[in-house]
Amino acid sequence: MQIVAPLAIGIGFGFVLQKGRLGHYDTIVNVFRFKDLRVLKFLMSALMVSMLGIQALRSLGLAEEVPVAHSYLVGNLLGGVLFGMGMAVAGFCPGTVAAGAGEGRLDYLIAGSFGLYAGAVLFGLAYPKLMPLLGNLANLGAITAAELFHVDAWLPVLLFWELGLLIFYLIERGPLRPR
Amino acid sequence: MNPANLLGRETWSPYLAGAGLGVVTTISMALFSKRLSGSGAYQHLSGYLGRELAPKDVYWKYVIPTGVTWEVWLLIGTLLGALASALASGSFRVRMLPDSQWSEVFGPSVGKRWLIVFLGTCLIEFAASLAGGCTASLAVSGSAVLAPGGFVFIAGMFAGGIPAARLLYRKRPGGES
Image (cartoon, rainbow over all chains, first blue to last red; front, side, top):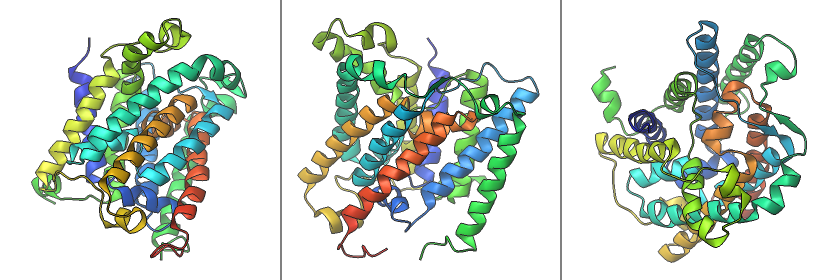
């Protein structure tokens, strides 16, 4: 049983979430109101760095087997919509509940832990009716965009960096700047 | 910049904090073959109650392992990391309610906040299980390896979040956008 590695990775995860001010209700909800784009900048930066880092380690032959999340697009999308609604109303996601609890928020630590647990149990009870249907709609399996479109793995990384830099420019200097 | 000052600062630029998350994600994914996750721990603990409620449910029999797994230790680490960060900057404070913006919209009731947190967390954990991951395990760890489902999930998050926020902040103080 590995304990040290997940604890250490978790500590890094919680540390940057707290430093990013992601444990605050207003940080989360205001990205959906275009009032504060901190979440968007944080998410894009994280994706740009991790895409580059993972692909670089892979190219150098230093990466282990990298896990690829399953794409079953209808379920991914429907879950995402419900998830976004919950985020906008309550002001967190599962990881930021832990970050908020760590900075002293008892609503996250107590009500949040019970709620997350209840949601996990409810899903398990609904699974036999729900997932055989939903899991097979637009089911691509564990595949990356590069494999899907038969292009070099570096190409989507490069395109995403260009997109990210463009978005950062538009947010900081251009028309997307929050007013 | 003195590194000690950096650790003690209350808030980092989102670009710096996000890049930090990118490094953590890279280490977890490429060196340990594990996605980051906030929702996974609760899935892996859910069987302790779920198997009592529904002993034959295929979810706990075949789909989701029950136990104190990698994801559970990751969650404990996340709590400790946020605690360390908050202590380092002196921003740790025990509190029952979020900052003022919450109260402007929902009022100052602690009971109401806790009820909405309970219902909200219940919904997002269900939704994350449905989607195949949460912000950490799908939006970040999925998109980081260019899995189409990760990007579709992010699109869904904003497609659900934007109208929900609009509805809540309609005719509220400072709600014009």
